[in-house]
Length: 109
Figure 1: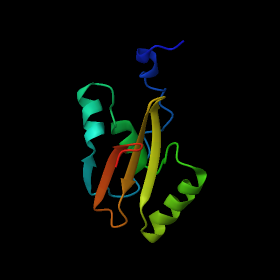
Figure 2: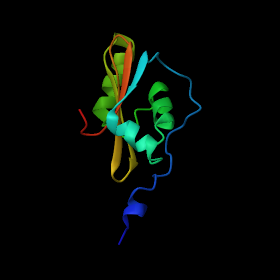
Figure 3: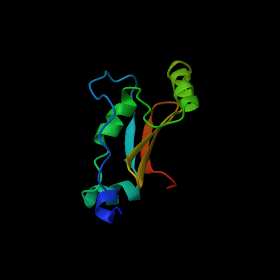
Figure 4: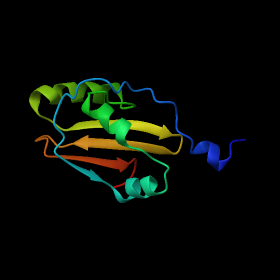
């Protein structure tokens, strides 16, 4: 049986971080939940943020990957999802005008 400590351990990184940045992100905003996990040393969102900027949409559904690729051309919203631990999933969204990128915990408003 897994302990709470084991459940909070990061899943090995699956994203390639040496890819070029594909779009500008504008202002970066972190939710209260993300900030709290950073303060507790339970989360480093930077690798996932860099994956998002490189067009690696993480654990998003295939339909979202296709929508994001269209949005890079047509100017729509970009959304990605990254399961960081079994209990922590990050959602990253960049606005259609590329003025703002928000990082939240899944389910957080």
